[in-house]
Image (cartoon, rainbow, N blue to C red; front, side, top):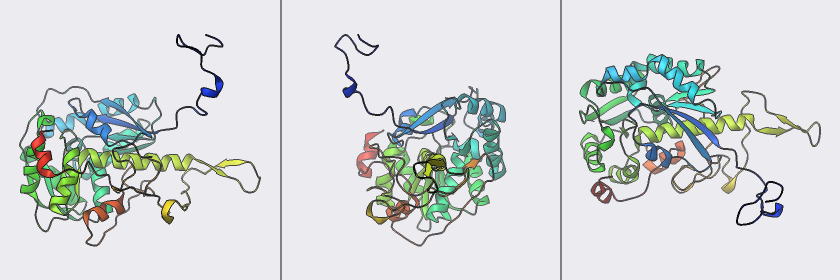
Length: 352
């Protein structure tokens, strides 16, 4: 081995080395409950250009009730968990638990993001907050809800949505007190079909511990409306906040001194640039989201709009209502991801 470069199989010439090191990634810190069992599903939503830094809240000897939701969203463990994921310097920290972020209503969700910001998160968001942002982007104001929870938690979700101007057409709760990750696709599909109503503009499947990745696309074709899930909206919101943070920190040319590059001032909005196809927002890809399974570049796609992610500074929120469109068109407009395109009968028969 010469000059410290080489192996038993031989040395590596300088010309064989890659021109650059690893590409910068969109870093997302993720806080999940102690019983979270769907790490693989969470990663399926992530493009190759992004990285998740996951940590868990401490164990709580409690069934899945409002009491457990409050315990796993208690300020002190959330503060510690936030600090645990800051070492890799993520652009955003996401609290990935639906019930833990809606259990105390809209005020509780805001307080939860405040805890993460106080602990050092550059941007903080929650699953419940990401859901509200996604519904705003889709223009959905009346939805059907499917949860694995007991009635009390399901009703708290409905109240949380109502506080954000979203009514519930119907809801179905599976009444589970634990091991939610064991629910089959067949049970999820049956619950969604039972909860759907003609006047519902979308369907939301709650709980980050409920497997849903493979059923979203076939259910949308079956129902003719957007189907949102907890892990889906969490990763979508986190990645667009991470992209926004990277754009804010990207060097920009200083035309007053040729050859000198300056950094964009903090908080300044990036200018739209023409991209492929003439769309200033960039190509979304066949499924309406550049970060779909398959590893598309997270730096492409729709320009991130300020959503419910709380930054270490003034917080803003934008709402938008849309007309009646095909669910795929409405999803593409919002930049929401979509799972695998499979037939709902095949998926339901798979069990997982």
